[in-house]
Amino acid sequence: MISVFIHLVIIFSLAFWWLKCYPENGKLVYWFCLALKLSAGLVLGYVYSTHYTDSDTFNFFQDSLRLAEMAKANWREYVAYLWFEKEPAFSGENRTLFFVKLVSVFTLLAQGNYWVVSLYFSLFSFAACWWFVWIIGRYYPNVKFAAILAFLLFPSSVFWSSGIIKESAAMTMLYVLLGIFLTVWQHKKFSWMQSVVLLIATWVLWSLKYYYAAVFFPVALSALLTRWFIQERMRPSAVSAYREFVLLLVLMMVFVFIVTFVHPNFYPQRILEVVVENYEAFRDKSDPEKMAHFHNLKPKVGSFLLNAPWALVSGLFRPFVWEASNIFSFLVSVGNIILLGFTIFALRHFRRLTASPDRLLLFALIVYCASLCIFLTLSAPNFGTYVRYRVGFFPLFILLISLGLPLERWIKKITG
Image 1 (cartoon, one colour):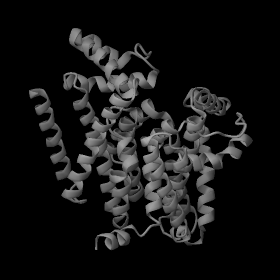
Image 2 (image 1 turned 120 degrees about the horizontal axis):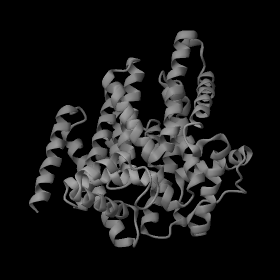
Image 3 (image 1 turned 135 degrees about the vertical axis):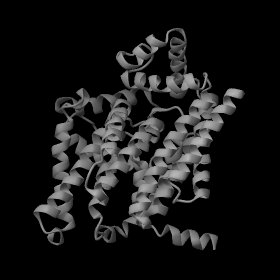
């Protein structure tokens, strides 16, 4: 109990310090969102401990305990294992091993207390998210309310980026990369500190969720290059939204081609095969009523293009209400049907958004969300799996939809 108390003091001291560094979004909002985030991590652990006999979060933690025991027995051997061991000596694959190593550091500090470790992971995820929202509010004050809703309050965004799961650490790094990208977008230059943080965040994200990074970097770099090309080589006023979008896509294809050479699963001859293999694996082990089905999916470009629209719809809005099989999937499905309604409403204002001076950012946001959504849904069509995996783009999609909704006016009417 003394150890738990000490760690709680450390956690809230760090929280106070972070609020002092970035206070602009409001103290009440900060503490409410922090409480929501910390609670989400604890609830995630409770749900997995009471409703599932086997779960990733406790498997990760149990493996981290074994590494912590190694540290207690031989500190030098433990440090050497962290830095040099590449093959999974425990369960899972290399990405799992990397995460277990990361968890083991906090397991040592927390003296083997799962719930304290969960609080730390939730805190760091919240801190990165709060910083990113602060960056958005700094450069785009009119978007701040929508950003708070999308990243700090939307249940799916909060829940699946909390606690001891890979998505929690991965989203921490992704928020850092998004914040750096937006800062560079505004100032058109890197600082040495940003460069160091960028390298660390990229390394961790690639080690945990390489497909998040494999979509983010082509989109981000193509957006930066598109803006440079338009501003330096063309007259911005003479470039239509259509031409901007086409140029963005062309440059993105170039960067995607480059990415195909940095990971075996992304090699041109392998990437389509890997997606189909994953789809078939999920199809064989999943309940047919709890997954998205695709028409004759083959490792061919034509087959992917044919199934992409349904993958996009399924990844964003399924399971539907009539597809829910338990209370958890029912809650998700209710949120999906509400989100579908908001999406249809927001599309009415799409033309106005494309006339915005920041339309290139909006195009990049759309391309990132659609690309990652289609890739993840085709690869992991099980409802329970991709509801968790889609956190890599879902908060950004919520932000995109929120831009076309008069949210503040609606809330004032409800509360007023």
